[in-house]
Image (cartoon, rainbow, N blue to C red):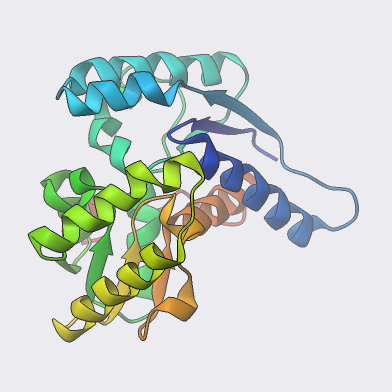
Length: 241
């Protein structure tokens, strides 16, 4: 079993889910007392969030590169970045790294396409929904990506940063997310990507009339399958055309 390098802390709430999910999948695959070989580097999200807010993405990328190198030095066979938003700096994170990064966007796109869906709605932070780094990665895999209206994007982002990353789960926010999802479906979405690792703390498949793609679970599953030698790394867009 390859050692899974989890780069988390953004937030620790969702990183804890990653740890649980990878161990549950290993146990399901191997049985008995088996658990995952992992090393975890957890950053201080307050520092990363400040870099996001101040548009200091180069600094954030350098910080995550240092963390990824620490995972490599600790024996990780590959890196799993436990956040969607920070894939904005995925290239900087991987700079000079001697082990691969299992890109969350590639794992998600593979799952969406395997379900026979091409037009998909995307929920996430304002960065993930509003900037091209994530949408373009999905589009390069042949997906048509829909995002909510500006007003709905603000709502989705606010709930993530004001509630979910702090471990707060409100029924009113769940209902608001359901309404945002419904509007994406009305706009033509055949499925919805839960493109923030904290979103799965609030809503699940039962909250959408169309198939959902929970990126935390998809990423964790892909990590375990690769670690166990069951599947290769999800192919980047250039290799899927």
